[in-house]
Image 1 (cartoon, rainbow, N blue to C red):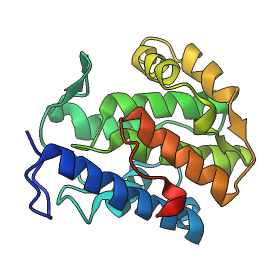
Image 2 (tube, rainbow, N blue to C red):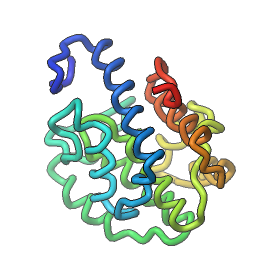
Image 3 (cartoon, rainbow, N blue to C red):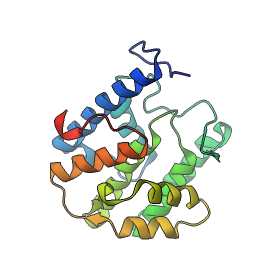
Length: 200
């Protein structure tokens, strides 16, 4: 099934290629312009704004709460009927300490508010919280894909593994080169590997 898109693409491989190129380019602009750190940190509005910025050229649902139930790898995300209530709850959660930030991130992952592009948007959202509170971001390029995905899968039960994994990979290197490598790693987690952000 190919997601309905603004470009009228009906082939899933072609859509994935176009999505990677367009959204990586938008992520690059967010970073180069400094806009990434101007969002309302830690809120669903910030996440929605990031998602809308990345995906608005492709999807009408960019930045909008999904209206369908979704699952991935046997993990059922928050039912649509309870999604707005879940997001309101997550919005009120504190994000002052490292533990609170990771727990909020994990809860947002369970909510998975968008039809597509949740992980890529949420990792930028997480970096915004960490940057504001600690002057650090995650070096996604240094985190193994399987270790990360397994920790995320287990985080609804316990966030300990995820906290350890992320805490070991915090960096204060905000150079564009480092950030772009992190974007590429973030996309690699989702199977997007055709383009390097730095070259777009």
